[in-house]
Amino acid sequence: MTLSSSIEPYLRESRESETLLINQMSQLMESQKKTIYKFGFGQSPFPVPQHVVSAMAEASYRKEYMAVQGHQALREAIANFHNSEEEQGWFAEDVIIGVGSKVLLYCIMAAFTKTEILIPAPSWVSYAPQAELAGHNIHWLQTSFENKWKITPDNILAACKNINKSTPKLLILNYPSNPTGQTYSSAELESFVEILRGNNVLVIADEIYGFLQFEGKSSHIEDYYPEGVLVTSGLSKWCGAGGWRLGYVHVPTQLSELKKRIIGLASETYSCAASPVQIAATKAYENIPAAKDFLSKQKKALRHIAEFACYSLQEAGVDVHMAEGGFYLFPDFLAFAEKLKHSGITSSQALTQKIMQDIGVALLPGTAFGMPASSLTARLAFVDFDGAALLNDHSDEIHLQKLKTGLKWLCHWAKNL
Ligand code: PLP
Image (cartoon, rainbow, N blue to C red; front, side, top):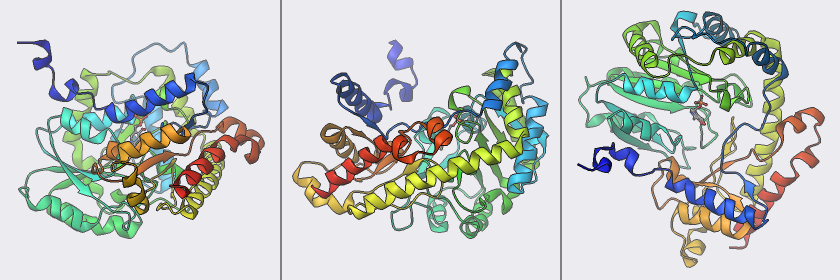
């Protein structure tokens, strides 16, 4: 038996191929001193707030393992933050801390024996690979531009139709969404619940961009389906701390068996999140006025940039919906399909490669997010700017110059197809 035949098939074929090519092209063009507009990678452009950085520095001597479920003070601070800011009814004992929410998403899936995972298309790149690694079956729920890339009750019904009603199923909902920037209203979320209950579907509500919803109060599906929803979130997006690896999941009391299994998986894999990070994260969630101030500044800047990007693209004839939160737009170049076809471009991968080659604008192809190969969609992460400088002196014209130039190039490219 060869090593390759004994490796899990998913790991044998690298799924990174879709984004790899863009990265390679980007590196090559940078080495040729060409300007690259980095709208591919979705990392927060904002700095971790100073009081949280100081808390981390002060706690750097902490070396002990912490409880697998997470530092008690942090779990309390998180529950309190959600209760006061989002009017949720969380208790610290229902919160589990992990090294980022990504590993917790995997632990939730791995806690189930082979089951059925319902994933909207488009959605975040890692849900499907994680579901595969955990040995589950995947059911894609295809959405459309007309429906703002959001699922409907009919999508859920259609996916459940061919699966035994009593088989436990998991639906992953992410709002505001990576890659579309769209979120769900309370009425939309409430409309799913009867079907979810009736078909034994639990929900993972990935609310990692939840605090970055630009306007109004966020809606939560757990308000309508408290016994069936696990909520994941963390420091990575709202606190600009992706590399600190701090995430959490709230598991409702009704799913205490599942909670035990997730903690068991955490115990046998990562043991606990880093102690200094947990101490610093406690400060981030405890200091609610500072968090609110930081969030309102970020949201104002992000909304301004999203508006500029969205309206410029729309003016150029590209179909795109204004983002409601987070860092992303999901433009659809379908209106240019005929013209693109003449240049031999009939897929999102070919589209993003051509854009990169022609004007140095890096986007990720829609296929990386579960869209069909023929879709002419792409994800645009509007984060190629210095967030610290922007928050400090508000000189949009200086700090957003590169980002706006990249967007203008993209619009010019589309208009001249
Ligand atoms: N969910 C979505 C939609 C994301 O975009 C990300 C990160 O990019 C994650 C989850 C994972 O976040 P983390 O593991 O940093 O908490």
